[in-house]
Image (tube, rainbow, N blue to C red; front, side):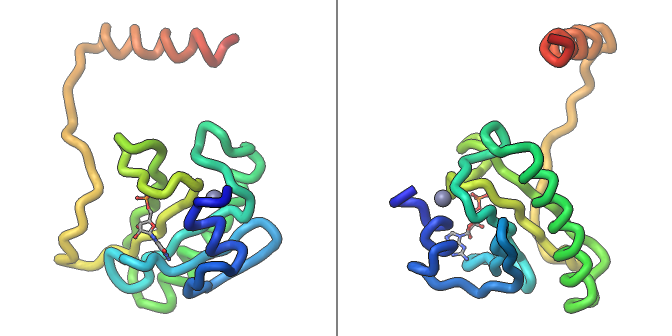
Amino acid sequence: MSDCIFCKIVSGEFSSFTIYEDDDFKVILDRFPSGDGHSLIIPKTHVANIFEIDPELAGKAFSLAVKIAGALKEAFGITDMNIVQNNGPLSGQTVDHFHIHLIPRRKGDGIKVGWKPTDPAEEDLEKIKEKILGVLGK
Ligand code: 5GP
Ligand code: ZN
């Protein structure tokens, strides 16, 4: 993708602080991090989001997240971390090239990752479940 920032980082046209690289992925420091160690796992091939990525590649990406999370834990002495993966503008995705955020958490860091819990009736949960099963069961 000619106008994709992350494709340009993968190709080397744009610079990045790379902490890991293999045939499938580049892992870089986020340029505008939540805090020290905020990293991004980026597939080398352009794929926009979770709805388009090959499941096998997604599996490798999440497996790599385990490795990088362990490295960040040791490097910064942290024990808490959010793994964030946004898809689409409503979710907060700003770069339309699939990526996984690794966000180290520290006491009082003020980072907000969350949603407002609701309390639906059980019959509504049942209807929602059936709706999804109708698709998964196809
Ligand atoms: P999103 O909002 O799409 O989930 O996350 C995109 C992330 O990419 C943001 O956290 C943003 O700070 C980061 N980002 C945007 N431009 C660049 C860049 O040029 N280099 C790097 N390393 N990170 C970037
Ligand atoms: Zn791209």
